[in-house]
Image (spheres, rainbow, N blue to C red):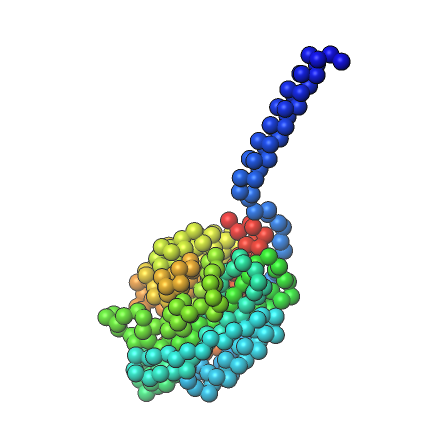
Length: 336
């Protein structure tokens, strides 16, 4: 044997082994990018969402502590269960600014509860105890039906729950949360914001599962009105600006630029404020609010005109389809 060639062979072999070891170390220390998958985005049915709103209205005003509220709670639980969710009912006492203490319920529908990667889809399901904006002063102390303010967000999310059952996602956990006692605060510029959104405050301090975390959340509030203005509120921008930008770009790409404005609005105190500041989970708000116009909300807001006639199916379709697309793109690692 020629020792020169043997030594050369051994040297080359040694270099190859070192190279392999080096490549192996490099591979194990690098963070792998998520694999992008093609996913089919299911169609969102505005007709189904509309029917879910009608069903909520059939119970009457859903003011905490009333029989109508309790009956609607039972229906919401059964509906989420029918769509395959594991449901947790979080009961708590809402301390209203009037001094009243009302039995209230946060309802959490868990889809793929064992998955670590999770997102939250939320809306409030209670309705206002008074109609202080109604032009008929004789009816201002009566509770409202809340087709848009409460009912629309719930209707959209129930349809998304139905979609998820029929078109399962296996690698993403989704928690549909219906917050209670959101709309029972006292109006006035000097009133502290924590008089509102009592359900989200309670949940943020007492999450339904120990050690619960979510990557982010999307809140829906008043997403069924005609000619809506979904601006980019500053609370969402401050705490979840990247998510807000992605959702709004997605909406524009899907042809809904007439509803989703790239302009910023004010600091809106809604359920997302407390999820961001107390729970520490980035959450955005899709809410119909036009800055600079009276109180900024739709004409039917906190009036008895917030009935089924206030609901527009194209608005439901736009919001529902955008959120549905965001979910499935998240599952496919293409939500960018």
